[in-house]
Image (cartoon, rainbow over the protein chains, first blue to last red):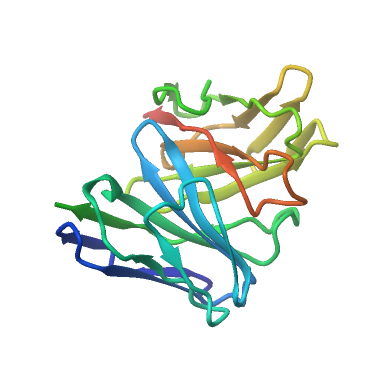
Length: 115
Length: 115
């Protein structure tokens, strides 16, 4: 089954404690992206990757890092999490941006609470 | 209808009726638009997309209409079913790239189907 898998699904942690949210896709997609979703603000893009070793900033990259060492994985790293990073995070992937009917497939989300 | 930054609007429709969800976009350079559906506890799910050289596109029970003159996008759902209850998002690519590697999402509209 084609899917985007995020782990963990839920995490409560404390300020300053480094954490990584993993994202893996089994569709051989070149493009992957991370979003955060906050009430009243919708989905905002954090980082995206067009292919292995190619990453770029989205609209809200501050406080986050990513890496793309393999095609299937795109982890999101919070080196020193802060309470304003409490949010619902989504990873997405697509075959190739801009191709009609080849949209981004989303994972089911990771809810992070930073105390 | 929804727009970036506004409070989440709601729409209630009787089961079996048609529904129309509206979206105003701000960037006249945007040339690719997508509608997503998000059910509670899940990630966004692709519904339909459209390019700016099109006025209308139809899928199964859904139709997207694009009016570039007034920068307006709508999603029509025919013969609504209880499973259509969800939050619906529009997204645009801001014309900054060929496709959708950088998307701007609206805040969403909550559709409730009344049995």
